[in-house]
Image 1: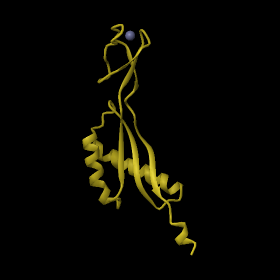
Image 2: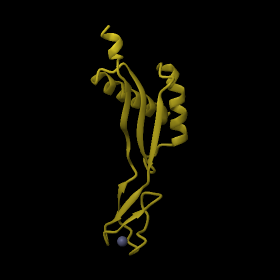
Image 3: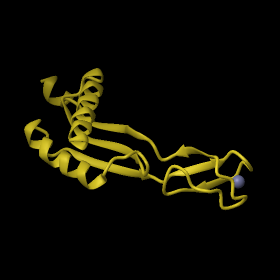
Image 4: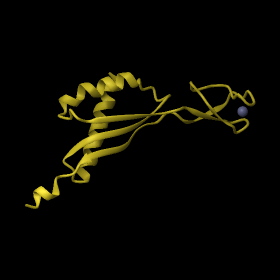
Length: 122
Ligand SMILES: [Zn+2]
């Protein structure tokens, strides 16, 4: 299942990020998911809910930001919203759009829990 491997990969990235900053635990991840990234949001949410427990991340907060798809017309240079890869330009009718936004699938930020410094200094 595609979304399950994405969820696992996101957690892996978040853990690497946490390890680099010396944090103990990941508490949240923020994702950017393009409308045309091919990811099913519902399936991805479901995938996260099933891997949370397995990975000991019961309280992990997952925020997904949907990035609307936009294209730029190669004929007239106008930008317009699209719902699919190839959509005719509404301005000039050109059929040669370049997708400029909407295919992203990335980890925007990772929230971590830093070790309790007060406690550890005792
Ligand atoms: Zn155009």
